[in-house]
Image (cartoon, rainbow, N blue to C red; front, side, top):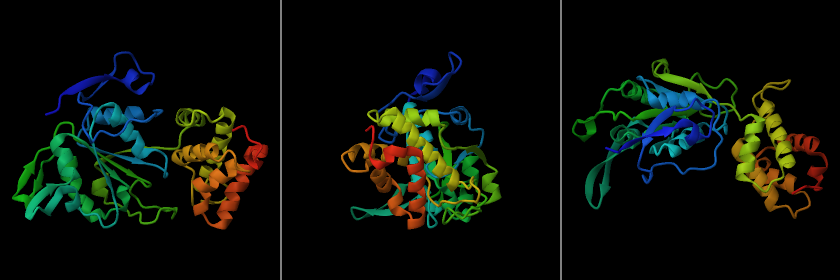
Length: 318
């Protein structure tokens, strides 16, 4: 069993907390399943996530919010700083519970049972992240009910093997909905989930970053980007998000959004193409609007042109 270690919350996550507050993680920083640590600005939801890591109390934790708001990255960057290994699964409509538990496979001519991410996480004390859980068949997910409550995992197909949950095992899920389906129609494949499963989840809303926090992310990831250009890019991003979330005069006026991930890509490409006639416009097209329909592309570029003024035409500060 891996040795645990206490981490000072204020120092580990660079946040303001009362002196002496700690959270337990692992001492071994070499495990291959520990996420790669990247620059990250932690936000308000950190306290809820740490409370869950400290004591799950028979619950799982569902992080819900719009695409690109940083649901998975929040979990992974916390895990990276606590040396906590992660099993991450991208859910889809054909994913079955047996894929999570394990199955027999042919290896070097012999049939061997290979444990899946759920079994490994329970046995070793890893975090299990079910990304986009609301894409899965709710009938398959009901098999998680007892596991979430702390019951052993019984693998009947492997001779009735019993895996008792490690004290450090935690189950996370992310989704663009909170399990009740997607009334907006923006996310294809979203399914209404079983109420019995949802009753076992704590729910944490994750929104887009506040402008000052997001500017800090830009400055960390793209340090050579002029601050004023970064501020204007964030204004454009937030207007696109507002229309995507249906906060304009009409509901859901855009079917694409500009996530923090896309924002960073836009900033990086703007610097890459700084010799082009309109580097900011070209970078936005490469980052986002090349995959939109012509009407939405025109609308997004019009927003950016209005916000950025002369910078949009190529008179840049890059």
